[in-house]
Image (cartoon, rainbow, N blue to C red; front, side, top):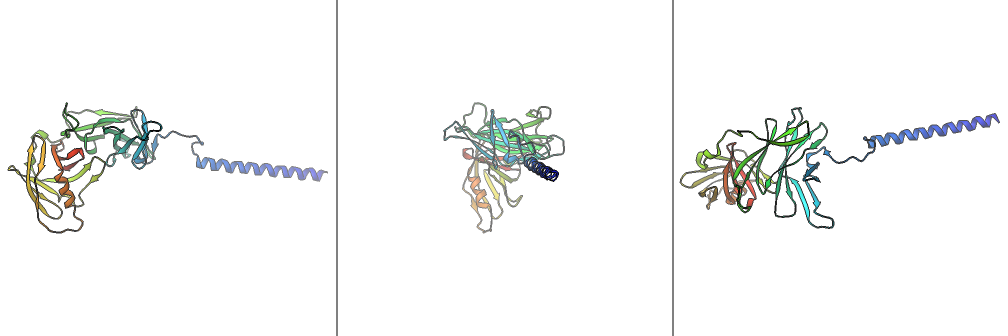
Amino acid sequence: MIKKILTTTLFASIIVIIIIMVAILVAGVYRFNFPNGGDVLPVVNATDVKNASYTIDGEVFTLVQGKAENLIAPNSATKHTVSIFGEPVYGDLTADGKNDAAVLLVSNPGGSGTFYYAVLAIATGTTYVTTNTLLLGDRIAPQTVEIRDGRAVYNYAERKAGEPMTTAPSIGKSFWVQYDASTGQIGQFVQDFEGDADPKAMTLGMKKWTWTKTLMNDGKVITPKKSDVFRVTFTSDGKVSVATDCNSMGGSYTTKDTSLTFGPMISTRMYCEGSQEDEFAKMLSEVGSYMFTKKGELVLMLKYDSGSMIFK
């Protein structure tokens, strides 16, 4: 009888030990896979700027590889598309030694407007937390985004007051964005002096202009494979000479106010494997206007508000 009781007690103890071990194992797996205790957390940040969530006018857009599409309404085929224009620009915006990101978002809500927004993605060490967005304008001509003096600078061209949307943007503007660590919000930073050049004193014939990049309004960025070889020189008698990575070209140009048109170009005929000459010449043929920036740049704006060629 005593032997039977001991055997039963031993068996029960073994069962209890097995149950405890299984419980510990399950808890360990659960904790490993759900480090936040298994809670479903809202998406407020991401390890990658191009896969983060951004909020525009109260609506959240969760980007996948830089793009998101939200339905305008349930059962609607129309979509509100938001994407990153160009590439994010990285630099320290909070003076903590981490590389934050300045992002330019382009929003197409399904109508005729194309809206551009400034937003920052602040690095926490392992993730990025996005800020509020600031509207830059509708159908502007983006140029460059840079980080200067701990602030993000969005450079673009806009229209004169009262000009219709059919008019190409021609007024250069630099929109400075500052991050407030106490609120986690961004706002416009206004300063009296934006650069070293006076656009009003600049002329097409003042120097040889070197092509640095072309920013297309669909987000595509075209850069020269060979630096400092694509150059454009304007003369006061309406002549233009062009150097490329293969041949040289020459022709005429005409201006009226800020409009600019190139005439037919005559070119030498040397063949060069992998040359960007044809692509560059095509862009020049599509130029409709020009402007100068306070950074001393020449911007040739393509027709139909399709993009901008940047020269230094």
